Image (cartoon, rainbow, N blue to C red):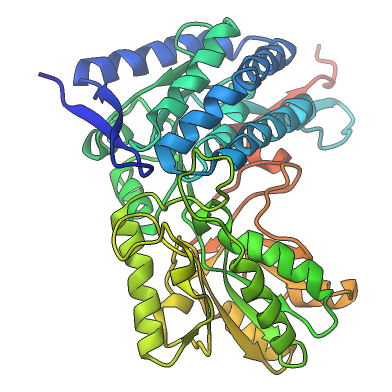
Length: 467
């Protein structure tokens, strides 16, 4: 009898999806079909690969409304915001499609008399994408589409919380007439996923998730010489300088901290504000957070939904309780949020001040609707505190001085440095992290490099005449 995957919706605690987990035989057949398909697909011209992916995106986008509803029920994002995931999927996919031909072309090192030399990018065999629930499509697309474009077969193992997301992508590829085995979905347990990674059938793993899970992925592949891309989250900081446009900074940092109930790897989790503007910033920030409407995410008036489950909510509650016990102050009257509860996934937003780095809320990833705000004297103190973290995914500065922003960016340990924006992936730029935020790169032309191996061609075409 097959084991079952059950997705419990944070909306009402009901079982929203049930699926049988793949058997050992089904896993083996999926991997075999992927390898067989890839052997043919690598010979397909890049123009045909881009056409297939473009057609897939067309079919996917046409299902926008259904996809948005499923996102809300599976992971709790408000329906008013869920369709943005479809737009982001399309933006990232179409950008990678647009740059594929140039990015995957042969590398010419320059002319050398008597020789024809170049480096060709050969596709890896089969890529396994292990995707999370918090941004289920945006995290998956950045490895799946580049892999298909590069001539690689792709297998998607999605979170047990969002299995329908994997199936929606598969449906779009089927509608685009993708060859059998080129893109496949597997619903597997954690243990079976690790066994799959350890097997000889997988040539690259693209993983997005927690640090602990990333370590498990790395251990599973320890005896294999394959690439592993790890995007493991963050504790992303923002620094508001004295010359910042406060209205702009407040509006964008509130959204950066609380969008998706704070469940974003690159969401704002700690803010450092120059002492000259600290009071005005904090007052305005707290006032805007009070305006959120927490409730049923399927209600179009809701703009703050539940977190993924009660355990995640309790983690955030524990951080807040510990911080307040250590001297922090909460600025949000949580009693104003009628759907908030002391237990369960419905969690009121909170803004903490009088915080420092002895508190978990300023050092551990929260992944929920809470942010700490600290006062700083100057740029140097801000940089020191921003770098005082095990993570380094993104960081931002809010200022009118581009020269100062560039200088600070050179000092801050992060994968992406923003000025006057946050919580966004530009598909034209490399998406990467440092420290415990992971390793490897997706998006931009650099994102294709991990999915291909260089092969040098060194052809001597002019040689001395021989008798």
